[in-house]
Image (cartoon, rainbow, N blue to C red; front, side, top):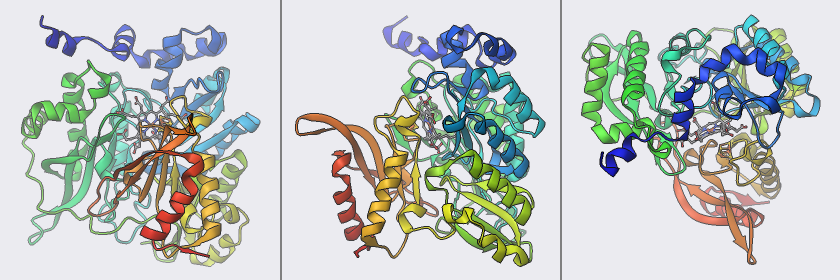
Length: 514
Ligand code: SRM
Ligand code: SF4
């Protein structure tokens, strides 16, 4: 074998771990792990395979695990929220929950000995965390106001659920899709404002009509290959295909099978779907997907229906159901504590219909608040903490986990991000929100490339010393004509960031000094 061919077929560390034992195999061993404790576990099981169950060992807080759920379309019931609140409550100061950039929740402080009981309790209320980490399909995103928005083109909730059920075997785990070459993201949008960031997903479905002049058949144009990684970031490209809603599940299945069976596995930095598309070209990729599906896909519709700027859903909005409103609450940096979660569950029951929604901006929506209950709802004390009318920088602030819990982090993010916007808000006035996204390392979980101002953790040099710093990204556009922002400045020490942001906000975003 030539050295080039060898390099292509050589398995990387994670492929070897998966080849030795499938990640999902730990499902049957969880009781035993709980019994022997995390210190006694095989380290490959503990550090890697447990992620197939959504259980993440945190080297920063050994013994206190993170539990990443699955929350299709970001929908959660008050009953589910209460169960999750009870789970984190028992961990006192260690327990909390973060709303993630994929419309999902991650719980903190989890002890391994409790996991079997936690899984039982989750199952009783229809929650699963299966296949939410490592080389699996992550939480599937959809419009957070699906089924509520008077202007939506299609209520995608059922489709998102069906795709999740197909991939996860109805939440029980599905070995067909537990050994992909790499992580995988899917988004399905039925709204007009691209509230899912379609362009940064491995597969995205965006609404588009066919034969508009005749019978306005609704369907989706399909984008593929979008991703962020430390080495490369790409916006998704057209598959040059249009599908009807009832083809969405089978197309996802076919793409995943083609990726699973043909995707590159040698170099982990080059294993996302786009690398396979690069190797084959989009036409061959599409052909292989059609072969797998056993049908020919229709050509893409001429234009899609993403015609609006992206909404943040914060505030009070009337629903398509007459007499009802959805109320978007700003959850600063997405962090919730047990008491907040209990209270949110109560509010959703007392004023709504027992449902809540999460957004990719790490915020929360309570739907179905009747006109007659709205005023009373708006006087609830929790809305002082989670405002419906937050200050313009806090409103649009997004941050990844950062050094508090993530061992990849080069800097602390969430608390720093919040403190800095508070200081800037005290000194400036704004005419509009400015979307600032923080991410603790080049993995880009906080999506700095979609922000007006993106800040990516790095190490910087100041007075001859290494200090926490950021690279500055600008130009991210969301909604219609979405575009990825790019790095415009490197290595800014965090301690020098405030004056730089202040000037930037004044020069480029119409902020004025108070
Ligand atoms: Fe991420 C790995 C957190 C969204 C790109 N991400 C990680 C890990 C699991 C690393 C680890 O094991 O410590 C982080 C867990 C830290 C912790 O304790 O919370 C982590 N990612 C997150 C979350 C929680 C950030 C947040 O605060 O919201 C998001 C969870 C979403 C979810 O509910 O599933 C999260 N991660 C993203 C996104 C954004 C998105 O999906 O829209 C991206 C960029 C988009 C993409 O994937 O194409 C992202 N995460 C990564 C990468 C780089 C992937 C790559 O191809 O190289 C890694 C590292 C890896 O996979 O090797 C990573
Ligand atoms: Fe951790 Fe880096 Fe992702 Fe932030 S961007 S959560 S620091 S892996």
